[in-house]
Length: 149
Image (cartoon, rainbow, N blue to C red; front, side, top):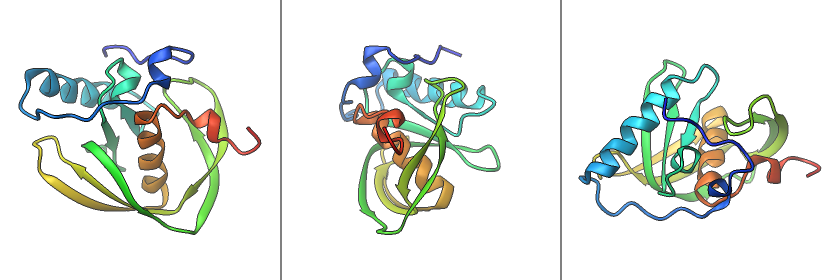
């Protein structure tokens, strides 16, 4: 693993830049690192590029079967009005958890790791994960969204 940055590292608070070249070697290496680091994590289900020191709008998510998907330049198109308050944690905050209110469904536009435009509908737990990771790309940490924070 390349090493996940821990809070209060300043990189975690910076807004990330869009990916422009999906064929660049640096991007391909970043995709590989995100996958490796997420798969190497026992508890993580999402990992954003800023968490490994790269301020680009890319994150990886791991589904219940352990498959990792890369989402690049994501944009939340729509969020449900229905929200749920649930416990969240973060690989950049080992051992720290808190209640966060998030939409239970999101429609997300993004590019896959090959630069192909995608639209995905995420529900329940995965909607929470996607919103958490998009926040990372905007320099927003889950502790800022904790209920009562």
